[in-house]
Image (cartoon, rainbow, N blue to C red; front, side):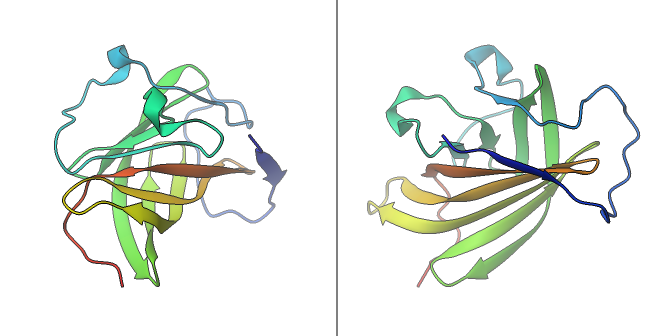
Length: 147
């Protein structure tokens, strides 16, 4: 697993809660963390070095595009603000109280009428810190076709 963190000086994100440190530490979500409805159309992403068969995810996105992660021991929710389709993938942007999340992924494999596997990066911004994590995951959405 490779995690790259670096500081940036000009970030237009205002932070109102000082309970988080600058370093973003994502933990695997457990069954007790699924406090929102998880049903069809969900996406489950984890580190690119973690097997998708282990059900060990660092960000989950439900069918209504509400995402959540466990950051520094706290369950954090993110609201979906936009999706940009690109060749072979998409970029989703989410905003939370103290974080901005960008999921930039490309299609890796697909099974007809089954889950689709994507891989790429998860970019999390908190205060003046940006953490970039290589990820892969299962996307169960069937609302768009990638060409």
